[in-house]
Image (cartoon, rainbow, N blue to C red):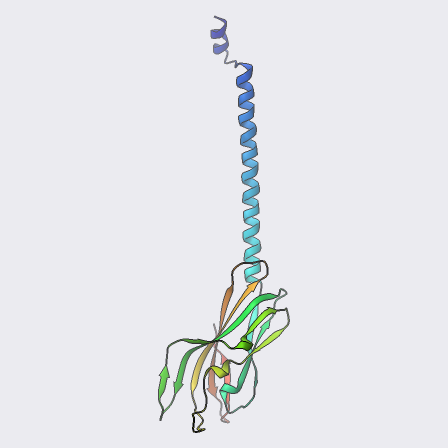
Length: 191
C-alpha cells in the first residue's frame, strides 16, 4: 500500500531522480555544444565571406610601346585592397576579333592565352603586375603588312586570398578603338 501511495503522490525513487538529473545534464551539454558549433560555423562563414570579397583588384592600360599598334599595349593588374592575394594568374581571353577586308576575319569564339609574365606567387597591397595581353593577337602578317582590327578581350584574373583554399576569378573586359589621330586605344567595357 505504501508503494501505491508513493505513486499517487508522484514521488520517485532516488535512483530515478539521479537518472533524470544525468539526462538533463547531458541535454545541457549537447545544447552548449550545438551553440558553440553554430557560433563557430557562423564566424567561419563570415570570415570566409570577408576574405573572399575584400580583395579589390583593378586592370588599367599600363602603357603602349607603339601607339599605332594595339598589340604593343601592356596592361597592369593592381591590388587596391589592404590584403595580399596569392597564386595570381592573368589570362587574356579573346572574346571577339574583327579584322576588316581584304582579310575579313570575324572570330566570336573564346580563346584564353597565358604568358609566363602573367603569373605571380603574391601580389601585395598597392603593388602592380604587368601583363602583355596584346601579344595574344598577332598584328602583322608574314609580309610585314600591319593588320587593323577591333578586338574585345577579357583579362581574367584568378587569385586566392590568404587562408582560403579556393581561388576567385574576376573578368575585366577591354576593347580596342581607333582614335581620330590613327592611334589605337584600349578602353574599359563597363561590367
